[in-house]
Length: 286
Image 1 (cartoon, one colour):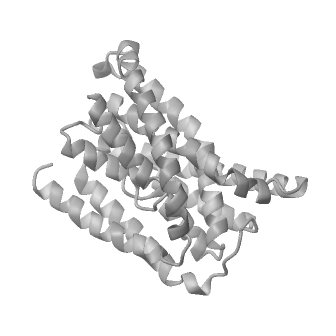
Image 2 (cartoon, helix red, strand yellow):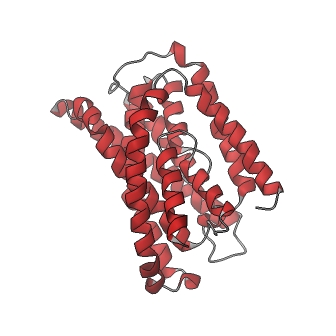
Protein backbone atom coordinates (compact mmCIF):
# COMPACT_ATOMS: atom_id res chain seq x y z
CA UNK A 1 0.00 0.00 0.00
CA UNK A 2 1.68 3.17 -1.22
CA UNK A 3 1.15 6.69 0.07
CA UNK A 4 -0.49 7.51 -3.28
CA UNK A 5 -3.06 4.79 -2.58
CA UNK A 6 -3.71 6.30 0.84
CA UNK A 7 -4.14 9.81 -0.59
CA UNK A 8 -6.64 8.60 -3.21
CA UNK A 9 -8.63 6.59 -0.68
CA UNK A 10 -8.64 9.47 1.82
CA UNK A 11 -10.01 11.89 -0.77
CA UNK A 12 -12.68 9.40 -1.87
CA UNK A 13 -13.72 8.81 1.74
CA UNK A 14 -13.67 12.48 2.69
CA UNK A 15 -15.76 13.59 -0.29
CA UNK A 16 -18.30 10.75 -0.05
CA UNK A 17 -18.82 10.62 3.72
CA UNK A 18 -21.60 13.19 4.04
CA UNK A 19 -23.48 11.90 1.03
CA UNK A 20 -25.84 8.97 1.71
CA UNK A 21 -24.10 6.85 -0.93
CA UNK A 22 -21.92 4.62 1.30
CA UNK A 23 -18.46 6.12 1.42
CA UNK A 24 -17.05 2.77 2.53
CA UNK A 25 -18.43 1.10 -0.60
CA UNK A 26 -16.73 3.74 -2.73
CA UNK A 27 -13.47 3.15 -0.86
CA UNK A 28 -13.76 -0.62 -1.31
CA UNK A 29 -14.35 -0.23 -5.06
CA UNK A 30 -11.40 2.17 -5.29
CA UNK A 31 -9.24 -0.41 -3.48
CA UNK A 32 -10.29 -3.10 -5.93
CA UNK A 33 -9.51 -0.88 -8.93
CA UNK A 34 -6.05 -0.19 -7.47
CA UNK A 35 -5.41 -3.91 -6.98
CA UNK A 36 -5.64 -3.83 -3.17
CA UNK A 37 -7.41 -6.37 -0.95
CA UNK A 38 -10.28 -4.65 0.92
CA UNK A 39 -10.73 -7.61 3.27
CA UNK A 40 -7.15 -7.61 4.60
CA UNK A 41 -6.71 -6.37 8.20
CA UNK A 42 -4.39 -3.47 7.24
CA UNK A 43 -6.88 -2.21 4.66
CA UNK A 44 -9.74 -2.63 7.13
CA UNK A 45 -7.83 -0.60 9.71
CA UNK A 46 -7.14 2.09 7.09
CA UNK A 47 -10.85 2.21 6.25
CA UNK A 48 -11.73 2.70 9.91
CA UNK A 49 -9.12 5.45 10.26
CA UNK A 50 -10.54 7.19 7.20
CA UNK A 51 -13.95 7.08 8.87
CA UNK A 52 -12.33 8.48 12.01
CA UNK A 53 -10.97 11.46 10.11
CA UNK A 54 -14.32 12.30 8.57
CA UNK A 55 -16.08 11.80 11.89
CA UNK A 56 -13.87 14.46 13.45
CA UNK A 57 -14.79 16.67 10.49
CA UNK A 58 -18.44 15.96 11.29
CA UNK A 59 -17.91 16.96 14.93
CA UNK A 60 -16.34 20.27 13.90
CA UNK A 61 -19.02 20.95 11.31
CA UNK A 62 -22.11 19.92 13.32
CA UNK A 63 -21.01 21.16 16.74
CA UNK A 64 -22.89 24.44 16.49
CA UNK A 65 -26.12 22.67 15.52
CA UNK A 66 -25.77 20.14 18.31
CA UNK A 67 -25.05 22.91 20.84
CA UNK A 68 -28.17 24.80 19.80
CA UNK A 69 -30.40 21.73 20.02
CA UNK A 70 -29.03 18.94 22.20
CA UNK A 71 -27.26 21.23 24.70
CA UNK A 72 -29.86 24.00 24.75
CA UNK A 73 -31.01 23.03 28.26
CA UNK A 74 -30.43 20.33 30.84
CA UNK A 75 -33.81 18.63 30.19
CA UNK A 76 -33.07 18.57 26.46
CA UNK A 77 -29.58 17.19 27.08
CA UNK A 78 -30.93 14.40 29.31
CA UNK A 79 -33.60 13.53 26.77
CA UNK A 80 -31.08 13.41 23.93
CA UNK A 81 -28.58 11.41 26.00
CA UNK A 82 -31.24 8.79 26.73
CA UNK A 83 -32.20 8.63 23.05
CA UNK A 84 -28.56 8.19 22.03
CA UNK A 85 -28.04 5.43 24.62
CA UNK A 86 -31.20 3.62 23.49
CA UNK A 87 -30.39 3.93 19.79
CA UNK A 88 -26.78 2.81 20.31
CA UNK A 89 -27.90 -0.18 22.40
CA UNK A 90 -30.29 -1.26 19.65
CA UNK A 91 -27.50 -0.79 17.10
CA UNK A 92 -25.22 -3.04 19.12
CA UNK A 93 -27.82 -5.74 19.69
CA UNK A 94 -29.08 -5.85 16.10
CA UNK A 95 -25.76 -5.18 14.38
CA UNK A 96 -23.82 -7.53 16.65
CA UNK A 97 -26.43 -10.25 16.39
CA UNK A 98 -26.62 -9.99 12.62
CA UNK A 99 -22.83 -10.02 12.33
CA UNK A 100 -22.59 -13.14 14.49
CA UNK A 101 -25.35 -14.84 12.50
CA UNK A 102 -23.57 -14.17 9.21
CA UNK A 103 -20.22 -15.36 10.54
CA UNK A 104 -21.76 -18.57 11.91
CA UNK A 105 -23.75 -19.36 8.75
CA UNK A 106 -21.98 -17.97 5.69
CA UNK A 107 -18.56 -18.83 7.20
CA UNK A 108 -19.49 -21.88 9.28
CA UNK A 109 -16.74 -23.95 7.60
CA UNK A 110 -14.08 -21.28 8.19
CA UNK A 111 -13.48 -21.01 11.96
CA UNK A 112 -11.34 -17.88 11.80
CA UNK A 113 -13.39 -15.99 9.19
CA UNK A 114 -15.02 -12.72 10.15
CA UNK A 115 -17.61 -10.38 8.70
CA UNK A 116 -14.82 -8.28 7.17
CA UNK A 117 -14.20 -11.13 4.72
CA UNK A 118 -17.35 -9.94 2.93
CA UNK A 119 -15.77 -6.58 2.16
CA UNK A 120 -14.05 -7.74 -1.02
CA UNK A 121 -17.21 -9.17 -2.61
CA UNK A 122 -18.57 -6.68 -5.13
CA UNK A 123 -21.50 -9.01 -5.83
CA UNK A 124 -22.65 -8.30 -2.25
CA UNK A 125 -21.88 -4.58 -2.29
CA UNK A 126 -24.02 -4.06 -5.41
CA UNK A 127 -27.34 -5.30 -3.91
CA UNK A 128 -26.59 -3.44 -0.66
CA UNK A 129 -26.19 -0.22 -2.66
CA UNK A 130 -29.43 -0.96 -4.49
CA UNK A 131 -31.29 -1.59 -1.23
CA UNK A 132 -30.02 1.70 0.21
CA UNK A 133 -30.95 3.47 -3.01
CA UNK A 134 -34.53 2.18 -2.88
CA UNK A 135 -34.91 3.25 0.76
CA UNK A 136 -33.51 6.73 0.04
CA UNK A 137 -35.69 7.05 -3.06
CA UNK A 138 -38.85 6.18 -1.11
CA UNK A 139 -37.99 8.68 1.63
CA UNK A 140 -37.10 11.34 -0.91
CA UNK A 141 -40.36 10.98 -2.79
CA UNK A 142 -42.24 11.53 0.48
CA UNK A 143 -40.02 14.43 1.50
CA UNK A 144 -42.47 17.22 0.63
CA UNK A 145 -45.01 15.73 3.02
CA UNK A 146 -42.57 15.84 5.95
CA UNK A 147 -42.13 19.01 7.99
CA UNK A 148 -38.79 20.77 7.76
CA UNK A 149 -37.04 22.68 10.49
CA UNK A 150 -33.95 22.84 12.69
CA UNK A 151 -34.78 19.51 14.31
CA UNK A 152 -34.13 18.28 17.84
CA UNK A 153 -37.71 17.15 18.50
CA UNK A 154 -37.56 13.50 17.55
CA UNK A 155 -39.33 11.10 19.92
CA UNK A 156 -37.78 8.19 21.78
CA UNK A 157 -39.64 5.79 19.50
CA UNK A 158 -38.17 7.48 16.42
CA UNK A 159 -34.70 7.43 17.97
CA UNK A 160 -35.12 3.69 18.53
CA UNK A 161 -36.11 3.16 14.89
CA UNK A 162 -33.04 5.05 13.70
CA UNK A 163 -30.79 3.04 16.01
CA UNK A 164 -32.29 -0.26 14.85
CA UNK A 165 -31.80 0.63 11.19
CA UNK A 166 -28.21 1.64 11.94
CA UNK A 167 -27.69 -1.85 13.34
CA UNK A 168 -28.97 -3.38 10.10
CA UNK A 169 -26.46 -1.33 8.10
CA UNK A 170 -23.35 -2.18 10.14
CA UNK A 171 -22.40 -5.57 8.65
CA UNK A 172 -22.70 -4.52 5.02
CA UNK A 173 -20.55 -2.31 2.82
CA UNK A 174 -22.83 -0.53 0.37
CA UNK A 175 -25.86 -0.17 2.64
CA UNK A 176 -25.20 3.45 3.52
CA UNK A 177 -25.41 4.03 7.26
CA UNK A 178 -26.26 7.72 6.96
CA UNK A 179 -28.59 7.16 4.03
CA UNK A 180 -30.46 4.40 5.84
CA UNK A 181 -30.73 6.17 9.20
CA UNK A 182 -31.73 9.56 7.81
CA UNK A 183 -34.26 7.95 5.48
CA UNK A 184 -35.67 5.85 8.33
CA UNK A 185 -36.03 8.98 10.42
CA UNK A 186 -37.77 10.84 7.61
CA UNK A 187 -40.15 7.93 6.96
CA UNK A 188 -41.03 7.83 10.66
CA UNK A 189 -41.94 11.54 10.57
CA UNK A 190 -38.73 13.21 11.75
CA UNK A 191 -37.73 16.52 10.11
CA UNK A 192 -34.81 15.86 7.79
CA UNK A 193 -32.46 18.26 9.58
CA UNK A 194 -33.26 16.56 12.88
CA UNK A 195 -32.73 13.10 11.39
CA UNK A 196 -29.42 14.26 9.92
CA UNK A 197 -28.23 15.71 13.23
CA UNK A 198 -29.12 12.56 15.16
CA UNK A 199 -27.70 10.22 12.52
CA UNK A 200 -24.27 11.82 12.60
CA UNK A 201 -24.34 12.10 16.40
CA UNK A 202 -24.84 8.32 16.56
CA UNK A 203 -22.01 7.80 14.09
CA UNK A 204 -19.62 9.73 16.31
CA UNK A 205 -20.67 7.65 19.32
CA UNK A 206 -20.03 4.25 17.71
CA UNK A 207 -16.77 5.14 15.96
CA UNK A 208 -14.43 4.54 18.96
CA UNK A 209 -15.84 1.03 19.49
CA UNK A 210 -15.34 0.22 15.80
CA UNK A 211 -11.75 1.50 15.92
CA UNK A 212 -10.97 -0.61 18.98
CA UNK A 213 -12.46 -3.73 17.40
CA UNK A 214 -10.50 -3.31 14.19
CA UNK A 215 -7.24 -2.56 16.01
CA UNK A 216 -7.61 -5.80 17.96
CA UNK A 217 -8.47 -7.70 14.80
CA UNK A 218 -5.32 -6.48 13.08
CA UNK A 219 -3.11 -7.36 16.05
CA UNK A 220 -4.51 -10.88 16.30
CA UNK A 221 -4.75 -11.69 12.60
CA UNK A 222 -2.31 -14.50 11.80
CA UNK A 223 -1.58 -13.34 8.26
CA UNK A 224 -1.08 -9.71 9.37
CA UNK A 225 1.93 -10.51 11.52
CA UNK A 226 0.59 -9.18 14.83
CA UNK A 227 1.71 -5.87 16.29
CA UNK A 228 4.57 -5.52 13.82
CA UNK A 229 2.07 -5.36 10.98
CA UNK A 230 -0.01 -2.87 12.94
CA UNK A 231 3.03 -0.64 13.33
CA UNK A 232 3.68 -0.93 9.61
CA UNK A 233 0.26 0.42 8.65
CA UNK A 234 0.01 2.96 11.47
CA UNK A 235 1.76 5.75 9.54
CA UNK A 236 -0.32 5.46 6.35
CA UNK A 237 -3.50 5.07 8.42
CA UNK A 238 -2.82 8.26 10.40
CA UNK A 239 -2.02 10.13 7.18
CA UNK A 240 -5.28 8.85 5.72
CA UNK A 241 -7.23 10.05 8.75
CA UNK A 242 -5.76 13.56 8.50
CA UNK A 243 -6.42 13.82 4.76
CA UNK A 244 -9.96 12.47 5.07
CA UNK A 245 -10.59 15.01 7.84
CA UNK A 246 -9.53 17.87 5.59
CA UNK A 247 -11.42 16.52 2.58
CA UNK A 248 -14.46 15.99 4.77
CA UNK A 249 -14.45 19.58 5.96
CA UNK A 250 -14.26 20.85 2.38
CA UNK A 251 -17.07 18.54 1.28
CA UNK A 252 -19.31 19.35 4.23
CA UNK A 253 -19.24 23.06 3.46
CA UNK A 254 -20.97 22.69 0.11
CA UNK A 255 -22.58 19.23 0.23
CA UNK A 256 -24.69 19.84 3.33
CA UNK A 257 -26.71 22.55 1.62
CA UNK A 258 -27.40 20.27 -1.34
CA UNK A 259 -28.30 17.40 0.99
CA UNK A 260 -30.92 19.51 2.71
CA UNK A 261 -32.12 21.33 -0.42
CA UNK A 262 -35.06 19.08 -1.26
CA UNK A 263 -33.18 16.73 -3.59
CA UNK A 264 -32.78 13.71 -1.30
CA UNK A 265 -34.24 11.31 -3.89
CA UNK A 266 -31.32 12.03 -6.24
CA UNK A 267 -29.01 10.18 -3.87
CA UNK A 268 -31.27 7.15 -4.20
CA UNK A 269 -30.98 7.30 -7.97
CA UNK A 270 -27.21 7.62 -7.64
CA UNK A 271 -27.06 4.51 -5.42
CA UNK A 272 -29.07 2.51 -7.96
CA UNK A 273 -26.75 3.59 -10.77
CA UNK A 274 -23.70 2.86 -8.58
CA UNK A 275 -25.11 -0.60 -7.83
CA UNK A 276 -25.30 -1.32 -11.56
CA UNK A 277 -21.71 -0.09 -12.05
CA UNK A 278 -20.41 -2.20 -9.16
CA UNK A 279 -22.27 -5.22 -10.53
CA UNK A 280 -20.64 -4.60 -13.90
CA UNK A 281 -17.19 -4.42 -12.28
CA UNK A 282 -17.85 -7.77 -10.61
CA UNK A 283 -18.80 -9.33 -13.95
CA UNK A 284 -15.62 -7.80 -15.44
CA UNK A 285 -13.56 -9.73 -12.89
CA UNK A 286 -12.72 -7.15 -10.21
